[in-house]
Length: 521
Image (cartoon, rainbow, N blue to C red):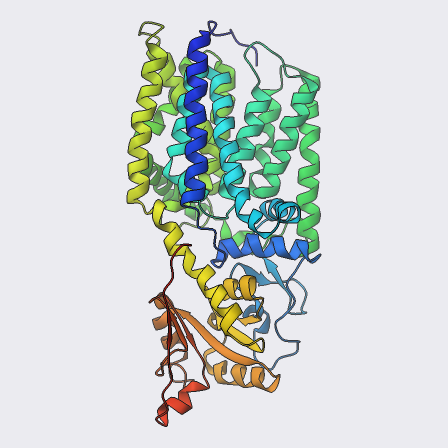
């Protein structure tokens, strides 16, 4: 975008700002390793990791745990483990809820470096996000703004919360920020065709990770627009990503316009806008302080005003994409907005950079970076208060349950579980049924059908699911009250019951419970 170039940067200042950015990169890597959950089992983590395994196995769906037909109603829903849903065909297969982009990256990493590489993908994207935030800030407002922006995104509670989980929010943020930084380029230079193609490919990759943001592909094109050939190249290079999404969704869900999340009419509604328009800014302000609002002023004062307006349009576009979406009740759903957060922080630092120009030129960069470091320290404090650094402990129960199921349960086992069903599938490769989809009157008959087919049913229930299980099946099944000792208790969080133990226990036999302590390894 045509704009006046800022004054030349002092070489020593630029080197110091790069050093600050390197520290931010190191912080990102340390947090991702030290506090990374490295566990699969919850709905989102199993969706991505389970889908990656499907791709490695050459499949687009999960086979049913029992060969159809089965005698109970809504069988396809009971076949789908956590993070999956019934497929479009009436053959009992399950399909992932989530888009394929991150899972493809995970599958590629595992194919090259082995199973452990699956958990390296999100941290690698986290480092990329911090580096590209530095590039974007430096190109928009100079190295001090770039270093300050990189430091802040590395300290963001929302960013850190998603950095330690195998989910798509950080990869989406990294790819979009990389696309924006590549399309923008240094001040005073028109985009080369090579850089324009790279920006388009990055935007296409971002769309594969988060398809609902596909309309925002126009933003990198606008950033390259001073060179019409570059803008055309950027637009053309996004096409493979969009086509890949369409083909995958057609193959998996039966239509390019369908996803695993269900009917768009149920997910999006104008009636949700008012709630989300209040919640998202309030949650962002609570986690980051209201300083993020300064980003709205950047286009009024920035040296590269046209680029700032386009960047602000990208931020607004991400917000707009989620305003009509189903409202949630927890602050961490600011993760939906994470693709916009690096750009918004860059705009904040751009506004502060222009304000710091009132200071002596040698002082302004130091003050800007120092202010960002102080604010970043507060953000780290907020992240700790929001349990970001405790997720490793909280999520590790799924890995521990998966290891238990793999080593202690017989290969004839079939696990009836809700949330832990993903870890039974992923770690133990055992068939599962979702008890929360079984009609209340059918629980006993479902378990009997499993036995008739040579399978041994086990119940796996998390502590917070106990009352739900009991109330769902009370009055319909003798097992409803779980009134016999579990075979295993993982801490006080996941309990594994063998329904065959109930009769023996009521007749006076002793049923021992294996108590398994768990925690991050």
